[in-house]
Image (cartoon, rainbow, N blue to C red; front, side, top):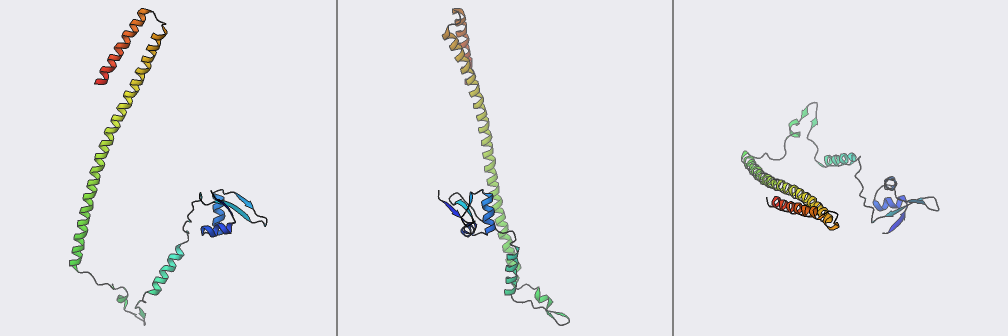
Amino acid sequence: MCVELLTYADLSARLKISREAARALARRRRLPRSRRDDGKALVSVDFSELRYTPRPRCGGGADHIAASMAKTEASEPLPLRWNGVLDHYFDAFSVREPVSTSLENASEIEAFKAEIARLEAMAADARADFERERERADRLDVELKQAAAETTAANAWVARLEEEVAALRTGRSTAGQAALRLGHLAAAIVGADRAARR
């Protein structure tokens, strides 16, 4: 954990962002701040914990416009001329690449149809896998709920049996009651065993 004391200018240079962005980041992350002797603000930054990637600027439209203008200027000028009449109008909008023949189009269409058929087959396989896994998950869910119910019932029986054993050990009951309880206990165990076998 290496903490550095940096000014906003140093932080902005280190993160390659503006000073205002560095100040906003320090405020947003609530980084500890202090003042130097000359009055400049210092920010305590632990770069091992600070994972920051600058966001792209929102006003990036100017860059797209500049790139588009450069691309337009680099391309050859349009063959439009104005001599009182518009000459070469159709040349400006003509396609410069050769038009593919119908045979090439047909082969491309067949290739696309084959690709579509392949993707549909993959989707059908994935759907079948999904359905199979969903059925398996449903079965496991039913088994889990059944096991939870059996565990709850077994815990209830254990609690009841522990109470019976505790009553028998303390000797609070007479011999006749103890024998009766012991008979009920044996009957309960046999009943639970039969229910578990079903």
